Length: 296
Image (cartoon, rainbow, N blue to C red; front, side):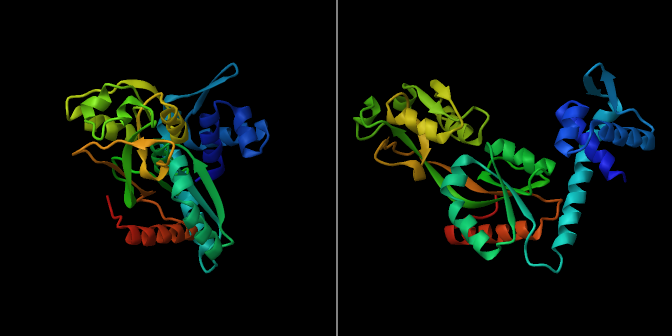
């Protein structure tokens, strides 16, 4: 298989042109063009239409792209496995995580991992949980440590931490005065939450929907620190992770209502993890045993 040609093909498709792909691959543009030409010749199919400076995939190119991604991911997995054989754990651990998990759950684990495996290089990418799932699915990272949502094969999710969510407002917010409030009381005030497509937003919205209530959103943002700031100055209520609750906000007592989400890790069930990734998963499993997490 022409791995160099496939790599160039995916780069051109991802970056929308030969020049950008050449820059990403640290090659000259003619070198990238030659690789694409050889790949097209070997496949006996035109993969791109060149419309002036614009490059678009042909029907054959669109058919090849997901398969090329999968083949390159499998080749990288094989390379890592062979490289690690008989060696101390080294290489690169590619990990996607959300900002919240990265700030509040991973630091201690990362310290332990680097102390145990100083030769391993960390490639940590911060992103929304939903995007982290996609990165694992496409082989861009080996695993994600993030908020867990609905998971389908070939992805496999393992819960590590329970993450309770608390309804929170500013100490001088009208909802802070009563000793107890209902979901209907809360729904009458504007909220600030993560984007509607996020796992956390769905948990909160479904809790209200089950009571026939809808949310009044002042705004959405996926940065929990921003959400907490807006809550603390009285602009809205939110459902904050327990780990973020402090004197800046007041937790509401809502009888009969408990919100919680699962945090954990996601891997691709069809790919071989590098030894570095296996070692980190081992630490996560130990953490799950300690905290009571389990398979989801």
